[in-house]
Image (tube, rainbow, N blue to C red; front, top):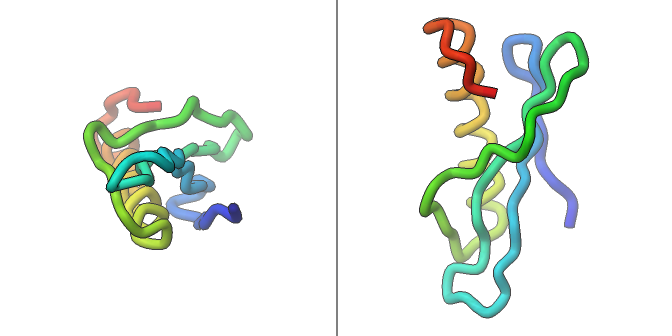
Length: 80
């Protein structure tokens, strides 16, 4: 499975979707964030966010990553 990724505000965000094949919603959304210094976060899961479509799960994962970067840079909260 190839993961989507993007650059956002000097951070590299990679979708990290976990498959759950026996579930009616088999994809759990999450992301990895690499800061400008090269440090990569642990997997940042979206609580209780499961999807039936892999592509949708990856796009939502990237949006979640962008929101976490915004939160850390704009509000000063250590998110990742």
